[in-house]
Image 1 (cartoon, rainbow, N blue to C red):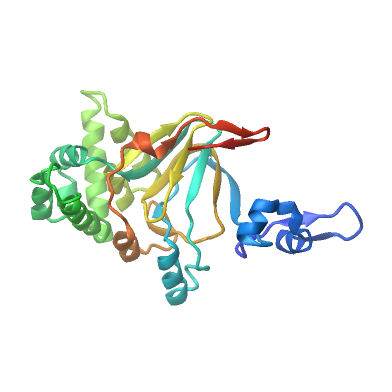
Image 2: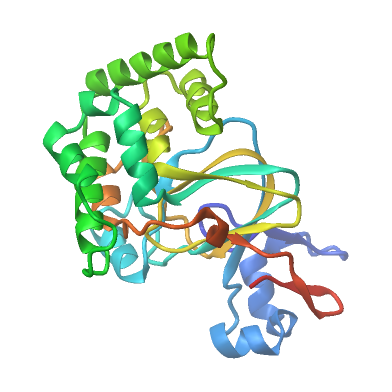
Length: 290
């Protein structure tokens, strides 16, 4: 529900006037927005509202901040149809699974050491340098971000053939090992994604991201330039009025790998900080997540 040109909503009148676009209806009835919204944004609905039922994982993606959105819209208006940013929040209606933000340095090291298939598509020297990074360095995490960006960019930029071979090798190894041990949640997710998107580089990229599970009523906030993917479940999604999505994996749609890899913050996020707490009542019919 919203007024974006890519999928505008319509209002059906109770009289004989038929229907009009929500955008036009709001222009004629601005008071319906409420004083606070009208004061801040004028006679414009400032958000989009969606109900999602995710049966098959959605793409690994990120949304640009306002500055990048303007650049992308100017240079590639067909792919990026507006110049607005797209921060968003997903409120779980059922148990909801998602990938969000990069895993911690220790998890990255463990993953690189235990997943030889990754070194098949990235520079082994880059991987080894990340393994040697000390997370106690007093540089604000700059070296970690630099090493992570280098490895992730090499992975996402790999040829389709190299990525497909690596994903297949990873799947085959995990299937063999499942006969003798219990796979982790992330390893089971990899097998699920490989079944949905055989040979896709996103199958491997998922290992770099936090895997979170929300209970009904919990919410996930995703800021600009942060990697994420919705994996399964039902949610309400609210976002700024924009259709800008930079995709790079787990999708048949247009991929803009270079833009995605250059725009990411490469912050390592504790998954518990991605999940917003149950809401406190702000008004009789409103809930505030914080």
